[in-house]
Amino acid sequence: MQKVGPEHKQRNVPVWAVIGPCSFGPPCLSVRESNRPAAPGGGAINVSATGVPLPGVSSGGWPGTPPFGSSRSLRRSIETLYLQTSSSDAENTRTKLNTHTKTGNLAVLLVLIASPIALFASSNTDRKIEDAAKASYNYRNVLENHVNAQASDGVVTLTGTVADRDLKALAEDTVSNLPGVTRVDNQITMDPALAEHSDAWIAIKLRAQLLVRCIVSAADTTIRVKDGVVTLTGTAYNLTQKKLTGEYAQEIDWVKSVKNDIVVNAAPAPAETMGEENDDASISSQVKYLLLTHRAMSALKTRVTTIDGCIVITGEAANDAEKSLAGKLAGSIRGVMAVTNNMTVKM
Image (cartoon, rainbow, N blue to C red; front, side, top):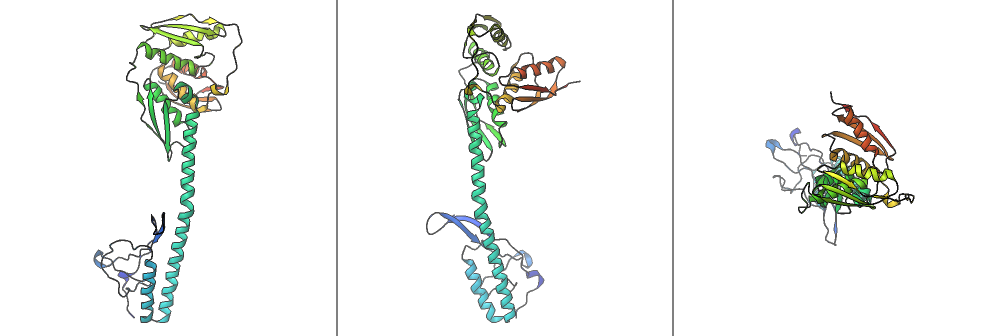
C-alpha cells in the first residue's frame, strides 16, 4: 500500500455552493467539492479522502474547482483505489467520502433555505422605507412630492429637484430618521432658475416655515415678495394666528420688512385632517431645519430624536439665549407634544 508523508496530508476544504445555469432551464444551485492539500514546494496534488494519490489523476496544479458531478469521478477513483488497498482502508475511504457528501448536502440545504429568506427580508425592509418616506409629512407637503426615494439593502438614494440646499438637507434628514436606513445617497439637485436670496427664494422659505409650524396656515395665507419686502394676505382664525404668521416672516433671512394684511375670520379653526398630521421622522428633521434657517441661530451641532411627538434635543449652544431659542423653535413645530432640551452651553 502506498504511503503518504505528513506533508501530503489532506486539508479540509469546504463545499462551495455556486449559482449557475442548469441544462434544463433557469439558474440553479450546483455543488462544487474541492480538496486541495498543500504539496512540497507550494504546489498541489490530487488525493483521495485518505490522503493517498488518486490513480489516473494528474498531480499538477489546480486549474480550478471541479464542477458538479466530480463527486462521481472521485468515487470511481476511490473504487479503483479500493482494489489496490486493504478492505479496511477502502471501507474507511467510503465512510469519509459519505461524510463529505452529507456535509456538502447540508451546506447546500442551508444555502437554499437561508438565501430566499434573507433576500425577502431585505427587499421587504426596503419597500417599507420607500413607503414611509413617500407617506411622510415632509415629502407630501413641504417637498410637494418632488423628491423620490429608492432603497436597496438599507441604502436610500434620493433624486429630484428642490428650491435650495436647506430643503435638500431636510429631505435627507427625514429618511435618515426612518428605521432600517443605513446610509443616504443624496443626489437631489437644486433648481437653477431660483437664485438664492431672491424674492421667489424668500417666498418659498416662508411657505416652508408656515407648513412646519403649528397654529399658522400656509393654505390660508398668500405670500408676495418685492425687493425683500413681504406682503401677507389671506385669512386667519384668530389674532394670534395672524401675529405669528407675521413673526415667522420676519425670521426669514434677507427679509427687509413685512406688511401683514391678513384678515381675522371669526369662524372656528378646523381640526387637522389625517393628511395634515405630522410624523416623528418629519418632526425631527423640521427641528433641525428651523435651527439651521433661523437668522438668530449660529451653526449648531445638534441631535434631535422624536418619539410620539415628544422631542429630545442634545448638542451645544453658543449661550443661554441660543439654548432657550432652540427649545422654543422645537416647541413651535406642528404636532409636537413636549420638548426636553438637554443642550449644553459652550464655555
